[in-house]
Image (cartoon, rainbow, N blue to C red; front, side):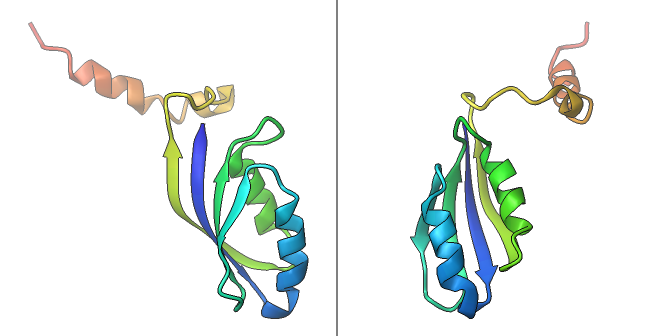
Length: 103
């Protein structure tokens, strides 16, 4: 499972439109809305999409000026990475090899 803390920046005149979209999204909670175009969201993986995929989709919404990932947690219950990510994450297995005592 992944949990993301995100700041979404929106033009204030589009705030209600974006809020209506966010309320209907599974795994997305609006934790703070000062009313000035900033939203603080807590997002988690759901069956339909990962939190990261949902954040990427939000960044493409025409009413969104920007997204900032503030916090990310991926615990042991997180889904396995896709095959195309494995090569980029190979350094993790090489680090465990360094922990092995040399005889």
